[in-house]
Image (cartoon, rainbow, N blue to C red; front, side, top):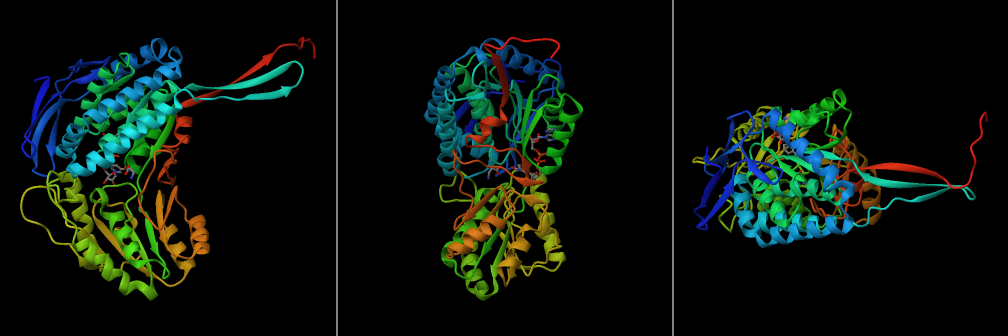
Amino acid sequence: MAQIAKIHIPATGRTIELPTGLFINNEFVPSADSQETLSVINPATEEEICKVVAASGKDIDIAVKAARVAFKTTWGKNVTGFERSRLMNKLADLIERDQQELAELETLNNGKPVKVARDFDIGDSIQCLRYYAGWADKILGETIEVDNKTKLAFTRHDPIGVCGQIIPWNYPIMMWAWKVAPALAVGCTVVMKPSELTPLTALKLSQLVKEAGFPPGVVNTVPSLGAIGGAALSAHMDVDKVAFTGSTVTGRKVMEAAAKSNLKKVSLELGGKSPNIVFESADLEQAATWAALGILYNTGEDCTAGSRVYVQDSVYDSFMELLIEKVRSTPIGDGFDETVTSGPIISKIQFDKVWGYIESGKQEGAKVLVGGERRAGKGYFVDPTVFADVKHDMKIVKDEIFGPVLAVGRFSTEEEAIELANNTSYGLGAGLHSTDANQCMRVSSALEAGTVWVNQYNILHNNVPFGGKKQSGIGRELGKQALDEYTSVKAVHWNFGEKGSWPL
Ligand SMILES: NC(=O)C1=CN([C@@H]2O[C@H](COP(=O)(O)OP(=O)(O)OC[C@H]3O[C@@H](n4cnc5c(N)ncnc54)[C@H](O)[C@@H]3O)[C@@H](O)[C@H]2O)C=CC1
Ligand code: BAL
C-alpha cells in the first residue's frame, strides 16, 4: 500500500499528504511482519478516507524497544527539564501553526464540527502542552530531616520509563495531548496507540513531533486494533506504565493484563453516567442551557456527558419547556458546515448501539419528548433524544450510551436527589444547579464523582485534575496530579556522619 495518503477535503479544497505507516524512531515504517491495514471511515458520509498500517504484536515490541533506547540515552534523565520544556513549546507552536489543517483532518475522521475541533479540542491541546512544558523544569523532590546531625533523606521524582498510552476516538487530539504532555514533561518516552477508528491526527501529530526536534524513539505511534496493539502494550513486560481512556469493560482488561505481566502502573479514565441536578432555586434558563450542553456537546460521545438530569418537582414543567426548546434547535450535520454544533456518531457499531438504547427506552415505557425517530440518508446521524418519566432500573438510566440521549427524572427533596444521583456504579462527573450557596456546598460534597460542576457543566481546565471514582477510573489526568502518574518517587537516605557498628 502507498505510504503517503493524499486526503482531499472537498468542503475546504485542502489536500493533506499524510504518511500512513507506523511512526517508530521518528520514521514512518511498514509493519515488520503484517500486511494488515485499518480502513478509516468518514462517519458523515460512511466513505473510506484512506487505509493506514495496522501494527502487529511484533511492531509493538519494536516500538517499545525504540522507546526504551530513547529513555536510556537521549531522553529520561539524560536531558534537562529546560530542554524538554523547549521542545514541548516548539511542538505546541507547530500545532498552532497547523491548527486549521489538523482540525479539518479531525473533522473528516471523527465528524465533529471543524470549529469545535479547531477552537476547543486543539486550542485546549496546545494549552495543555504549554502547561506541562511549564512543569518540565519544576519536577521537585523534597529534603526530609531524619536526624539533624549525621543524616538526611531526600526524594527524587524519577520518570517512570516507557509508557503505553491507549486512547479513544471521541477526542483523538485532546486525549493525545492529555497523555503525551505530562509524560514528556517528566522525561518518559511514549508508545501511543490511537483508536483504530481515528488514527489520522495522531499520525499528523507524529510528523510535528519529528519537526519539533524530539529525538527518535521519544514518541512512537502505532495505530492498531485494540485487541492486538492495546492488549500487547498492556501485557508488555518492558512497558512501565499504561495510561488508558475508554470503556470500563476494556479498562478492566488493561488492568488484568498489567497484573498478569509485570505489574506496570495503570491509570484508567473510563465511562460514566453522570447526573445533572436542577434545584428549584436555580436560574432555569441557565440550567437548561448547561443541561443541553451537558448531553449534546460532542454528540454525547463524552465520558462526562450529563446523561441523567434530575429536576425538582416544583420547577419541572418550566425547566422542561426551556430544555426541549434548546434540544430541538440543535443544528446537526456534517462538521464542515460552519452552522452545525453536533456531528454524526463515530461508527456503524456505535450508531447501532445508540439506537439499541433508544429502542430499549421506548420498550421499557419511557416517554420520548423529542427525537427518537430515524433519519433517512447517509451518515451516522442521530437526532438528540430526550426521555422523560424514566425509572431507575431502565437501561437508558443505568448504562453509558455515549450518544445524544438524555434520561430525565424528578425528585422532591435534596436527599432524594443525592440518592438518585449516586445510585450508579460510575463516578466521573456530576452537576448541580442552585442559587443557594449552602445547598451547593452540601450537595457538591455529597456527590460521588471525581468532578462536580456547580451552575455549569463539562467545563475543564488543563490545570485542574480530572478523573473518576468508583468504576469510572483510577488516577488523575490534567493538573499537577497527572505528573504523579508518570513518576516514581525514589527516597535517598544519606549518611554523612554516623559510623555503622555491628553487632547492633
Ligand atoms: N471514557 C471514554 O472517554 C470513552 C468511553 N467509551 C465507551 O466504550 C464504548 C465502546 O467503545 P469502544 O471504542 O469499543 O471503546 P474501547 O474501550 O474498546 O476502546 C478504547 C481504546 O481501547 C483500545 N482497546 C480495545 N480493546 C483493547 C484491549 N483488549 N486492550 C487494550 N486496549 C484495547 C481501543 O483500540 C481504543 O484505542 C462506548 O460506547 C462508550 O460507552 C468509548 C470511548 C471513549
Ligand atoms: N470529557 C472529557 C474527555 C472524555 O470524554 O474522554
